[in-house]
Length: 347
Image 1 (tube, rainbow, N blue to C red):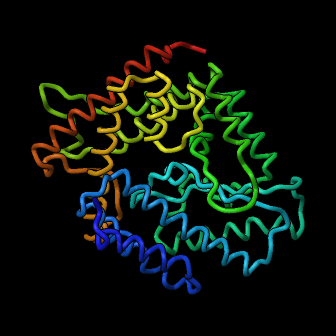
Image 2: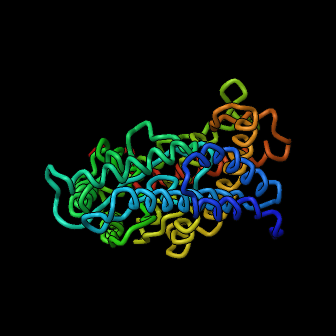
C-alpha cells in the first residue's frame, strides 16, 4: 500500500497544475514528472497504476491549458470535446509518450471565417503548452491542430474505417481506436457506439486481428532470448502486441472499455480469452511496462531522451526469466489469434 509521502509528489504536481497561469513553470514539468514516476516505482506501486497516474496528470495539464486558451480566445462558437487518443486515450502513458489528440465540435461544418479559426487556435495553445511541458508533438501529425472536425465529420470518418477496413485505412484509424474525451461539453458517445458496432463486423475484426499479430516478439531458443546486440525494444517486443490483442478481443465482445486491463477483463468475462490467458497477458504487460518505466527514468536522469530499448543483460536473473516468459506468452496468444481469425486469408 502506498504511504502518504509516496504519493505526495504526484499529488503536489497535480494541485500545482490546476492553478497554472504562467506557462514558464512548465519548463520544470519533465523533471518533476520523472521524479514522481521514480517515487511511485520505488514505493512498489503497480507499474500499470503508474501509467494511469502519468496520464491523469497529463489530463489535468491539458484541461488547464484549454481553460487558459478559452480565457484568451473567448467562449467557443459551438460546444466541443478535447479527445485523447492512443496511449493517452487508454490512460497508459510512459515518459516517452508523445501527443495524440483530436478536437470534435458540435454544429455544422465550418467554412472560412472567424468561427472556423477558433478551434485550430485553441488546439495550437494546448499543443504548444504540452510541448513546453516536455510531451513531444506526434511525428505522425495526430494532434488536434490537424484533427479538428465537426462531430458529424469525425463520426463519418469512424464509419468509413469500420465499413471499409482496408489495411491502409485502419493504419490511419489505429490511434483513434482508443479515443477518450478529456474536456468539453460535447457528448461524443456516438464514436464509441460506432467502434463497438465495428467489433461485430467480420472484415473490421479481421484487420484488427492482423494488426494484433504484426508485432512479433523475438523467439526464445534454448532458453535464450534473441536480442538486438543485447538490447530489447520492450514496446515492439510485447506491450504493443498486448495492447492490440486486448483491443481486438474487447471490441469483438461488444465492450467499449478503453484501458488494456479493462479490455482484457471484458474478454475474460465474455469468454473470448481464458482466465489463465488473461492472467498471463496481464502479468506480461505489467512486467514489460515496469521495465520500460524504470529504463526511461534512468535515461531521463542521465540527460538522454527516453526510449524503449532495455539492456537485457543488465536485468536481474529473475527479471530475465520473467521477460522470457512474457515474450512466450505474447507469441502463444498471437498464434491462437492467427488460427481463430485466419489472419493469413486473402480478402
